[in-house]
Length: 159
Image (cartoon, rainbow, N blue to C red; front, side):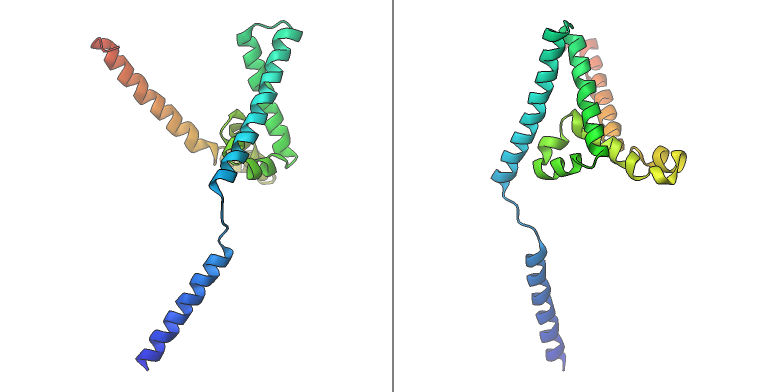
């Protein structure tokens, strides 16, 4: 009787492992890297086009044009997120769509759009930074630590 139970457990484990293999998606690292490269490249080309237009067509200085370029890319990302297009782009392009400034804008806009039905305070106010919050927190903390190390280094003449 104990052997039957053990055989049943082994059979269930084997069936479960086969099921897991069936439903687990397989990913091709070179393919994903190529898609991320293409997506990031497209975002960079759009940014460069905006920057060139701002400098050449509208006569803005490089720093001002860079600010406008960032704002327009963020605006485009939020609009595409609101139209439910950016998630599809991010799904296809992976890190190529999520790492640039447009991905950060998407990570702030998506929860705001998703939870707006719960109201201004408990919906948008409480949930807007659920994705971007940790990035902001650890980014600020890391910059503080590095700034402190730099300050100490300046005090001792290391830098």
